[in-house]
Image (cartoon, rainbow, N blue to C red):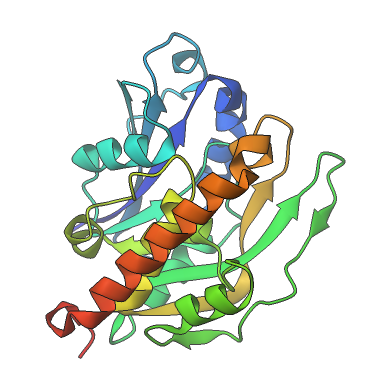
Length: 250
């Protein structure tokens, strides 16, 4: 029997040129016996700008939909995800060798429902920069991510772009939040509210920094909108945490 891990990628026109690098990083993954990956690419929009960059590979499906930003595109992509686990991969990022195997090993541990890993920012000159607040490798108890996020100006100690999560739990939580940004942070906080996670200290993502990325735009840090995003992310997480029946790691 073959098991599948579904890698979901939202993409829009300006970032499509990075898809071949993401694909190369996927092809370099070595999975445990009996496992294979599926790449589910979803364009945020319906243009002709993305399709030419989608590799011809039977393991890849490509879809389009009305513009709604990354969270909407990823949630639409879930309709084609066949795997027991869902891995996030932004179109402009890359997975270092061994990432998927380490994610699968983490999710095989009792009571672990989602996994994250160390991130290196990939700068335009090819150099990398790490994060100075990584937790130690091991389990992340319920509520720990929210507590750190609140105490550090809404910056979590683990990166939502590295998430690998049980598909059933992802669906139960409604996918990604309906926000113009921070939709992945909202998902991370919801997961943290109801289940235990895992952090892998080995680098699991090269996070490309470039002028066209959404998080580099001025609107991303507009204080009024940012405050509203952070408020609803926190309120949702706390509401989920208060519903004891949600606990699935007992």
